[in-house]
Length: 320
Image 1 (cartoon, helix red, strand yellow):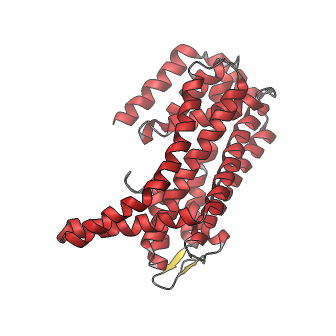
Image 2 (tube, one colour):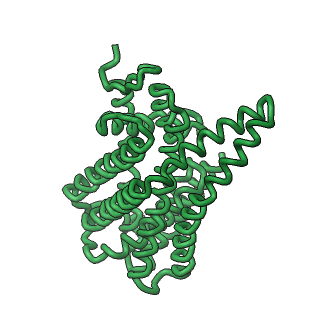
Image 3 (tube, rainbow, N blue to C red):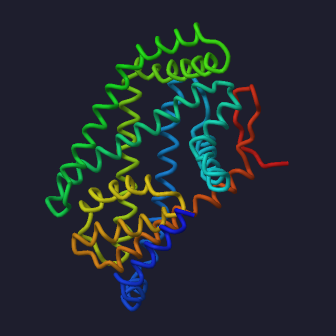
């Protein structure tokens, strides 16, 4: 209910007070469908890149799986994460699919965790670089840059502290009994799986680099949508602002995600001279392209992946 209320409030404010109906229609009439098709293709390509990044992290855990099968798992997780209750997000779903197949629960969870963390660090790096380059148009940009750099430092500190924390959990597991002991043992196994990446800095560096590419492609998708409206001068602004919009989109309740992105896009790009109606149209079209992941994920779920428990295999084949 909170998310629904935020959605309604933001949309009413934008459409009722900030943007005239005639301006919105004029912006829609100027949209180039060819550029929109390119933007949709970039959204899908971005998700494939994310799957290959995850594949690199899984190989370090000794989990062997086809990159294209993993892409099917990724898309399936979007669909199931949308239809299941909120606690079952896409990360939980893709972890469950792999853990059910390989029986390596800790490895699957560790790969997803490091995938998520390196994605956030990559997002922060792109945001910091873009905000530094774009100039003083955005208040508080140095705060965002500082937070991005602190996130990178935190990533390194967490890696350093992983070993002593694992020792603490091992002692808890040995000395405790019942539920607490089992929880400590599972946490220890997960942390040990995460620590595998400490001995593979090249894999982590590759994941971070791949994450930067993923975020740049995300920014290019928004830039292409601005091109569809005739704004070809906003490349650097997109690289600076799209990661900030993505960060903001992580915090509101799920039901307000569309409105939250729309409101942030209108507010931020408006500071750089973009008509608010154009910014709103770009945000809505991009959100629509992202929503396409759900029916594509439903198709992947119908065709596969079919999990064969305990075999170490995740196969993509048509359901019987």
